Length: 352
Image (cartoon, rainbow, N blue to C red; front, side):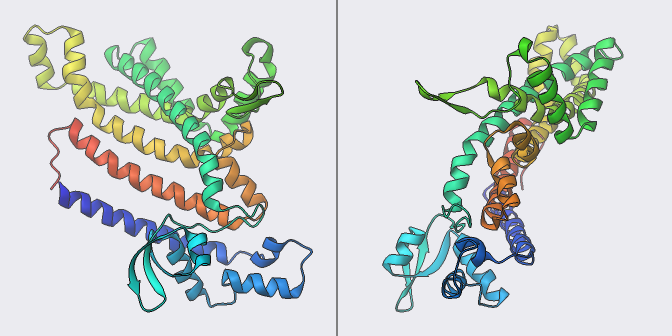
């Protein structure tokens, strides 16, 4: 088990290294002057040269790349100085030479060109909104998807089965951005008097008398829209898996022993059928962090997606790069976690 974990961690690190490399060279060939965007349009030549040197933009691309890797790595080498310690907030581990140390730190994703705040602070402020939205969408998709999939498997070729299949096909076919527009227009505008929901809104609202308030009603439409596609996948996957398990010999044996249908369903069918479903659920949860971009932007939901789109429109590349790297780390961590859940659910799997 430990060997398997180390192997998965190593493969995950290789994936992240590839993502970092692609992201760095992709965004560094785009047009635009980072020093100019950092200082603004009204800047003199001396200030531009100073910022260019500070950002390392006067160095070759290979050196800029190694410097970027050093910044985002949790273990890195930095000079010991009050400026470097304040910038990276590191913990010294081992001396490397006379003035440099091997340090442990939070990955430094640099600063926004526009707000001058660190990318870590910007992402930390946007992450709760996206996490709540993705979690709500996944819970909704899982509960409704498993219920419809199990119902369709228990009554095959019935109107319930056909309706579940039709709805799942529609959910898979409709793109997120189109579904967001339709849902926002129907439930937030056309039927607003009946639903009481708004087209746009974030998790928090500012009341002039009560201050900052949580607006859970603003979560309903974006969570429903974001959960449509995983719901459709879960319905089809759970239906097919349940049908396959229900046809197994041990299910007939369990029924022959006199177990009730509820006992057969919960003790034998659910656990053996949940492996592929859990894999899909966990994989989709990681995907929702990236897929929330269009949904958050259309519904005005403050999260990683909206922050990333706003940064793209302003050509704020450090924020975009930091967001992409964060989502990549989430993918790797969640996928490793899923492998162990999958093995726990299905005893036939042996991690060697």
